Image 1 (cartoon, one colour):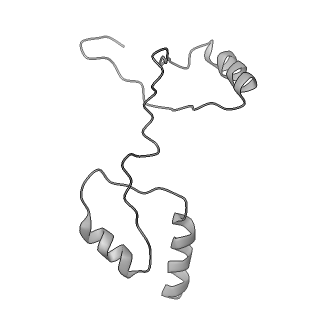
Image 2 (cartoon, helix red, strand yellow; image 1 turned 30 degrees about the vertical axis):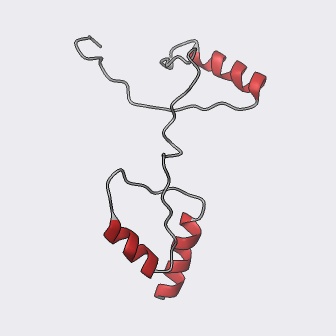
Length: 94
């Protein structure tokens, strides 16, 4: 595949998508610009969900989860659902 075609494919894949780092990466940014891409700095990751609602509760996907999710989607037409690995709390038991 010619490099120009590969670069256009990468541009298409990255457009409106997100690649990020929490570390400075000036060399990578400079190289990206030389390849004709346009990296942009953002203040916060669009994937970093921090609810402002004090009523927000993290809950496991227990037996009641599916029904509550279905009700929420029907009532609000959308939800934000984040899947994370379960972990034992410090000093707790699984």
